[in-house]
Image (cartoon, rainbow, N blue to C red):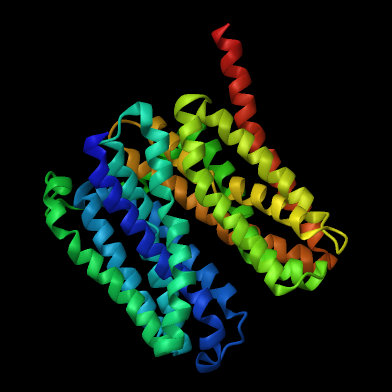
Length: 398
């Protein structure tokens, strides 16, 4: 455990700051949209651009990490996020779009890089716990964006607030330089990156039925997570009839539950449950929570809304660490970064595609309930893979 503490701190800090950068545009949107010339809904387009770029950044990162070094790529990711949010601060619509793409390219390789760093240093008995703890950097980054950026906007304006976030990313990239020798010692820039090697991560994941099916499941799970963070407040205020304060509190409850369970699920996976069976149970839980969310109406008490939101967040936000740990475990030796990158490309594809599907259903049916039910059915279908695998494994063992 002692040998993994410092790598864990470094990777959590990196994940927290790149996440803070990526989650800052939704926070600055109300103050920035007038200067940019877009309606506030532009943030949905920026999010799609960011995670589309993140999909490619994650997919092609494995081979580059293997040749350049995981910490060096993490430094590049921090600098790309800094550059992206600086471009957004210009308020030029074209540069804002370019900034979103740039941040996505920086965000994509961060988790594969951190997985590569920790996979080499984490004992098997605590792998799920460590990976889950590392993944709390993502909601922590979101919390930092929500807590700090509004204050920066009030004090210095949204442009300066965005630039300060970018400077924090750049500062961390420089601060971790002394640690690079211990992590990337065996890697050299002189080693060429062959174009064919960029597709190796995809071949690893699609060639292994376990990784492939888990990747498809992660698309549904991440889509459910995106639907929670994107639509919950709008749904509760515009269709259910609750105040913005109650809706915001429900979303905050979901986020808090997700932070706690990212660690709790890891402990359970390491000590009491098979990781893939636990992932199936988590998928079942988020499907039930989404179905209950579809039933919300003005007769529901806020306390009941908060309970369902907590279950929704505990499952839809909390699953990532166990999933990434299992990907690293199944991956061929020395290929954790490549397998993680391709798996995350499938994950981010869900972040882009499922909310678009959700919104299309709302537009066609004028029903958020129908959209939540559809997302729940999709997630339940993909979660069933984990139960089928467990049943097959038990049959083989007998």
